Structure formats: C-alpha cells, structure tokens
Amino acid sequence: MDTVFIDAPAWLDAFLAARGPCATDEDRMRLAIDLSRENVVRGTGGPFGAAVFAEGSDRPVAVGVNSVVRLRNAMLHAEVTALMHAEQRVRSFTLHRYGLPRHELYTSCEPCAMCLGAALWSGVVRIVCGATRDDAESLGFDEGPVFPASYFYLEERGIEIVTGVLREEAAAVLRAYAEKGGPVYNG
Amino acid sequence: MDTVFIDAPAWLDAFLAARGPCATDEDRMRLAIDLSRENVVRGTGGPFGAAVFAEGSDRPVAVGVNSVVRLRNAMLHAEVTALMHAEQRVRSFTLHRYGLPRHELYTSCEPCAMCLGAALWSGVVRIVCGATRDDAESLGFDEGPVFPASYFYLEERGIEIVTGVLREEAAAVLRAYAEKGGPVYNG
Image (cartoon, rainbow over all chains, first blue to last red):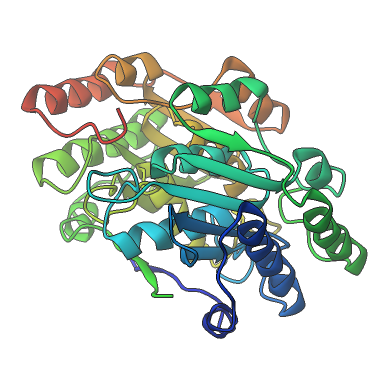
C-alpha cells in the first residue's frame, strides 16, 4: 500500500515563525483560533485549529489545522493533526512518558468523538477548548457521539478539561466560515 | 513542521498478494484477524487488524494493522490506518460519495472511541467487528468512552453495526499477545 503523507499547509511555518511567545491559556488559545481563521483565509481547510504545548514552554511543540479536504482524509481534524505532529516531534507514541514534560492540547472548538479519543490515547494531561459543541453544531458540523460521560471518562483518568476559553473569538471564526459558504464535510 | 509518514509494515504487500478472494463476512473478518496475528508474529505492532471493502468486491480497498509503537503515533490503530489508506486509494475524504460503491469496515476487535468516530467521518456504511470490548478490556486494553448510545448514534445515521463475527478466533489472537507479554500501550 502507498504511504500516506500528512504535511502542514505551505503557509504554516512562516505563520508560526512570526508568532510571539504564548505564556497563558489565553495566548495559547488565541494561537489555536488564529490558526483556525488563517486556515479559512488561505483556503486550506475548515475553521478549526489546535496546538500542543509542553508545560513551562511558551512555544508550541506542534500545531494542526483541519486538513480533511486538502489532504482527502476524514481523520485530519485539527486535533488529530496536531497530536500526530507532536508525537513525531518528541519521537514517542505517548506524550506522557517519564523524562518528558506534561503536555496540553489547545483546540479552537470542543473535540469531536474521534478527537476526544485521540487526546486520551496521546497522553496529554489537559485539554483546553474555545468554541462549544453547540457553536459548531448550530452551523451544521456534527461532533459525533460525545456525551457528558465521555468527558467524565477522561477526567477519571487524570485529564483536566477546560471549556469556553475565548469562546466568542473562536465561535466568530466558525460563523464567518458558515457565512462564506464553506463546505460542512461531515454535516 | 515535518511531514508525518504513515506506511504499512514491510511484510504487508506480499501478505495481501498471497491472499485469496474474500467474498463473505467471514472471509473478510478472517483477513482482519489474520492481519492482527501477523502483526504480532512479525513484531510490528499490537494484535489488531482491519480491512475496508467496497460492496461487490472480494479484494480489500485497503487494510491496516495497529502501528502505534512502530510509527510512534498513538492514533494509528488498525481502523484509523485502514481508513486513511482507503481514502487515499479512492482519492476522497469520504467513502460515501456519489459515483463510489458503498464501503464497509471489518475490524478484528470492536473499535475504541477514536476509531468509532473515525469510522463515522469516513463514510463507511457498515462496521463488522470480531472480538468484543470485553475481550480487549479483560487483557488490559482500554477502549475509551464508548457507550451503547455511541453505537446508537452511528446507527441513527444509517451505519449498520455487526458484532461477534468469528469472535473466538479474534479473541484468541488477543490472548496469545497478552500471554507473550506484548505491551499494552494504552492500559
């Protein structure tokens, strides 16, 4: 079988290089949101962005943008993409390993069922979300089978989940995308 | 950011080439199970295999084996890997598109939360499972936040789910792996 390649859009490295440090939750969420907006502006995908940070660092280990249509791959939501790049960067199938700092996932929108599972397996110890499930679903995006018990399942396993950080900024990108008539590929 | 490469283990193409046609559910499940066993025997990953078939074809569109440890990527469960390769093969981010036949996913073990979400987004219309969640969890594998409502969510969207096909054969591979002391990377 042929190799599957997952690469970032061409604008991403320059975008990151021009970026200042991200010290706080708000700084890091703004990076995820700005990625979601840039992905739409550049025409490289849906309105979703994510970033993985190591505790104590103000630069992301890796970031991701929704790449479903660009790379013809339904699994390349922003979170999955960011987590795959982060694990490659640290050369480990888990970000929660002895000798590594703790890692956190910032996502411009609450994760779908697939991405919540991916976050669990990735070894991040904290998930910080911007826009809510309702924000996404009101525009026709499906979040899949995520229930209150799903979040509880992760919390029981030591993962802290924070929602609604810069929610309005994040939701505004979703609304702008819908108004522009961008494709809702899983609606 | 660097490109992430997802390639099949070196033995896979020859394994598939030597394989006869798979016409029935049992034939197709046996392919998924044999992939799960071969992955352990060859030392290329955990005891999980999956295959995507187009309706009316007796050859898989793509297959996958658990590649978490080999490719240092927590998301590369057998199902995600098979679905990514299948979408690349048909050059579409959904397998449920006008002009394409219907596609079905065969997996040697009931999907975890991530893979159930991935199957939903992939556009397969049928998911056929071998070993059960209990079979996997009794050996220490975590399946994540999957609930009866999760299956119902997919069924409501037109996806047929069949469980327990060749369950004993599939579960035997899981047990052999555990007895051999293979790593349970998400336990």
